[in-house]
Length: 340
Ligand code: N2P
Image 1: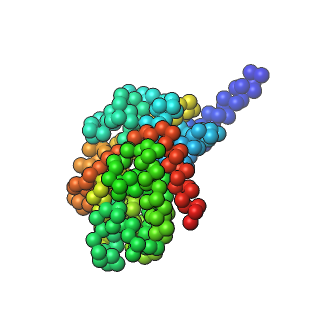
Image 2: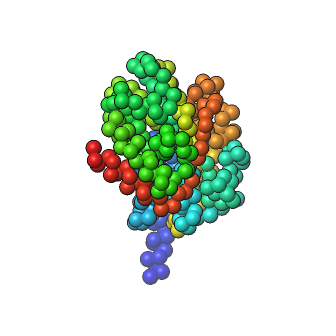
Image 3: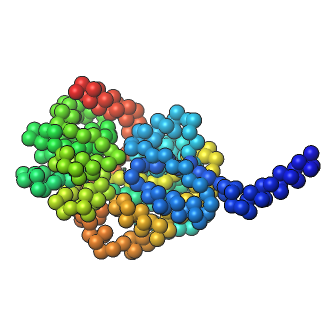
């Protein structure tokens, strides 16, 4: 027995010295088109920690995968309001802030917000807005808000996010409500508006809505600001407008699911992402609004002047946890889309 043990120790030392033994790993579940692979590769090269990376395209997809269990994620990337849901349902592990030595780089104005008032569970990753992109070579009439966007003459010329909460919020804004004014009554008012709108849309896409605009399939979009920023960098004909009625501002965060097996590794990746030079790489590839003030100092004047990444003005609101009404929203949009 002892001999066997000695042999095993010798064998693992041999594998370890040959660099064959993994120095840990972690399972990351993040938004698609948001975390550059080169950042994960850089982390692995430095730490030896392997990152298994899966992606999703909506907060609802993240939540349902986590609730279904089975997949053992160590690091996830919810939006503010979904982190709020997860904290309420005790789905997140408290962070060990002592391990996050680079946390001071984050804009203090984005810490301890209502979704995580004690700042115990979440670290801002990127923030952004949801707004209108217009191909100004194709669209000559002014488009200032949702009502202009969803005009009958734009039928089959539109791409919008494939996101139920977003779609219903735009309808609420067009009716004069604010983003979180969600009740059975306001949803009943939003329903006929959404019913008309879905008939006009050509493409629903949350992963890469820029693609339909770039290849000329559509002339207008309602997209995440980072997608609009990429379009602006490609061609100045793509203009970004924050809808006059009101626009959604999101703060997407990094968080560790309760019971995650590889929490030390997850903390290491969060702290790596918080480094200014790493965060700068994220901005270069996915030009959202960087909450890391030390990283922002490293961005070029051109990056900071991108009107989609760093909008100058806008009537912005964040989403809140709306409890069971989230299921009503999903039902409403699913019904209306399937009636198509
Ligand atoms: C990235 C999606 C970004 C953010 N593809 C949505 N909150």
